Length: 278
Image (tube, rainbow, N blue to C red; front, side, top):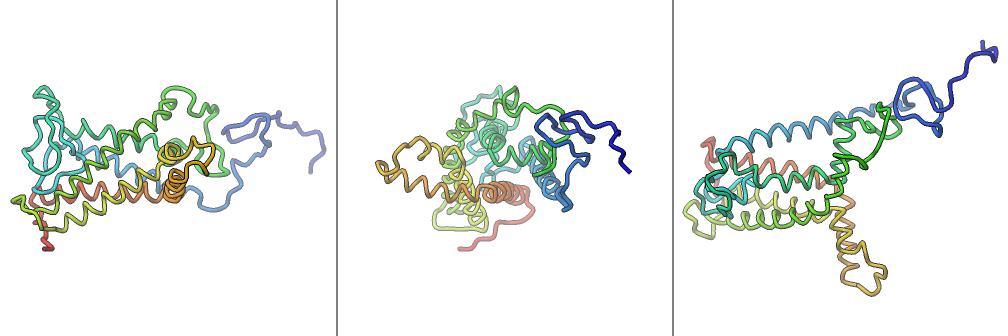
């Protein structure tokens, strides 16, 4: 029974840790949610971790990334002279023989940098790996919070520049997809199962890239009068509709690019032959 003489918690403090200050209620419970709030961040962390493990293996493998007419999206464009000889997809030997590592490491920095600094992916791995915060209405366990104002997270602000790099990468993957309408002898008018895999991946990559918040801002974010720019206003509306599905497109394109690479790996390693549709 309370007597009114019990010691009161100091203002702005509460058991359980987390971000606490003078503006927060001194509630003993860490949170008041009763649902399985931890499922979403756990699933996000598992999915991202699976992709990191797979992409790291494939990036450093430096093998089984080309089988005419398919070239893995992880290795295109191939920028080193240690690339496998290929007549499918861009192969620019910009880096000489001094580059002894996998050529995938020269190109993956751009699409991965674009995704790493993406507004959605920030939310995903902040919650999934850093618990910052782990979920809505669940206080994070860290005692201090500086947001993205300090190094290294302040570098997240270069996302718009990675967008400029992501657009030509998507264009190159489109070119690679066009070249899949050839057979192993580079004759046009053919289509294999891999062509459909590449088509799906290209569509999702473009949808994810164009649904980016930076793209939406570039298209119409700086306009003060939409009535004076009807074309850009329509584009801004179209990009806005894609932006509403940015999370779905982020995951779908992540799976599709891994699937496209894995498909090339299977046929390049001899696991099975690419079925020809016509």
